[in-house]
Length: 369
Image (cartoon, rainbow, N blue to C red):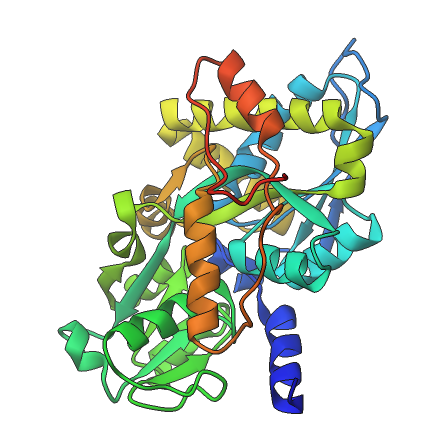
């Protein structure tokens, strides 16, 4: 492999942070790199499972609201009984993957790009995707004085969160499908792709350094509050307007040794998603309360209200869209074609869904053989 490609692949692995809804918040600077929250007490008189505790990782992001609400409302701990949840929050996908590989966390909520990169880098030995959590929550927002149609993007400067991250790959793929040319690594071409941390992008937009951004929530809604307009919701580009933005991953070692804990956690996420969808306003307030507890900041109504509406909380990991996102990265020249066979193990999730009277979900042929 040429040195340039090797360097690029390493850069992609390190850069593939994911979003999320607050993907915005992921990169948005809410929370430290790894904030511990070990104050959650096990359920009273709860039966302990095969592990005394489970170490859970997630972002203080709206796209990780299943974890936020599940902890805030005690819905996850209830299913785990006497097995205590010990949480750590992260601001970037690579650091969460490092924690998973090191055994610092057992289960994590994370986006598709870091899941793909971590799995391929380990040659399929470090993680499994065991469930879904969220879909959507990504928008192209622009300065309406400079950009009125999608064709107007040509010649403009558009921000994405990171080289090779989920939104960067999506935008590069969209550009390619338009027939325009951009060098993936430098971002130079018919459109200038500017890699900008989500916490910096609002200031870059305000100063005129960028003309718009392809970003996750709540960064998109933050820009709208500054006068930008939504030109495209990425969900419009996907079948049924759904694409994975947050997965649930587990280390293969923990899954093998403690399948009962994984199943209980998934039972908690399924029940949490059901509660979120049945009580959207209460769930939004719950997620915001957890954000404030974790970061010292909550989100104002003009940001959280539109951001919350653009995210769907679902149990299906939308495996076919994960494969599509990997294919997009390959086409953009950011990734050599990966073998994702075995990245999914949906056995426990489907067991839980069946018990809840819900339809089972598919792994798109990428499950454990």
